[in-house]
Length: 115
Length: 116
Image 1 (cartoon, chains in turn blue, brown):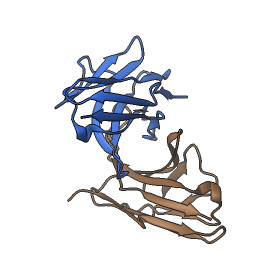
Image 2: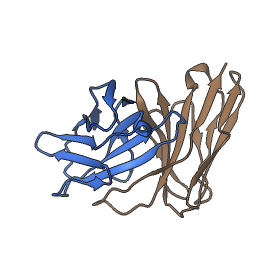
Image 3: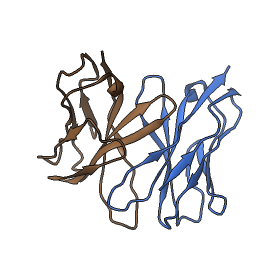
Image 4: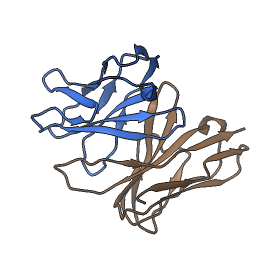
């Protein structure tokens, strides 16, 4: 069974600072993918970034990067130069793609950016 | 515009009154899935479908039914809703790229259901 753990229920960060959201995962599968989604107060799920288990380089998408440490089973999201619009709920998720591309989600981290 | 749509977006109903939440995607995706989101629990999969006429249970299927008669549509059916099914529901879809890769899932806007 797969499990995602997000240990930070809430974070407050000053605008323009970098922020790291923690995510650890547990799986016995060799092939898997790790995702981060953003959920603003409006409720929709916005895809941010993806890391495959066989990718040797950390994924980056604009101000988002994924700090992937396979041996430690961690996949932390780093947001550089935070903005007020980054205030939202952030979910880490994993898929192991064995006929069902189910995403297993963590419980989320609520990020609040302070002006 | 490539998208996943859900209807209705908001629904208040009473215990036992059958309802259907529709989901439609215009990206020709093989894979579709339903999740429910509850505070403190993240999102949990209800049912999924790998293609037309192929569906299977996720982690929390009790009290729900689905069908996949057309590739683009994947309705979620609550035959006899109960208050514990009050939740935020998401439909998602993606291409199926095989056993060696995983793929981004596109989410619908969500349906907020309240069962009184």
